[in-house]
Length: 259
Image (cartoon, rainbow, N blue to C red; front, side):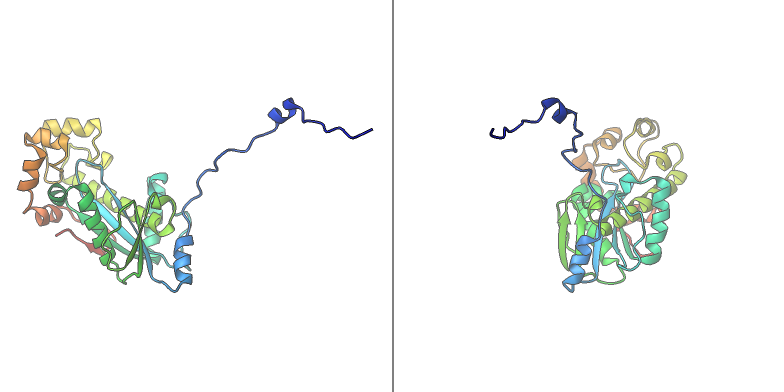
């Protein structure tokens, strides 16, 4: 009697556990940096910025060259970490890696627009490094004028370890700076919302008006100031150095201030 094929019981197939269609994305790795090292390309830096969205404060950019033999454990996209974890990793990064930091003051943002000011700050952060990299990975879709080869990596802070380290340095530096701004300008809550457009900040803007740290080209601030963004940008052109000098930038010491 010929063998007959049996079709699997549909109920048993449906009852079997199913694997997820997509795996959760892994954390950032050192794979791109190691590939460059194998090609003889070194040093390699990662750079990222913090503070594109707020209504006040500078954009802070950081560039980091990790030591392949002393990579801090736990590096990740700064947005995925608690403030305590970021602070601990910041200290470790500054102890074992080469770090450069730069900022674009609100007046530069008003003059150039937020995208161009951010790219300018990223390029300055690379130049602030104590050693010159031969390759730079930058978070996002725009390359920067780094003076060497540059690769843009979309979602780079979640993929490339040196970019993740830069995101932590930029975030912690900016948060500490905004805490200082909050102490100098009580009533706005900068030390809590870091300049973002939360309701508390909006109410303070209406009640107290704009400070030198506010981005007057951003619509909510321009509305309070009673001037259109284009007029504010023209008036801000000569103010970049004064706006940067008003607040002291915290560690690390390797800082390229806006000019």
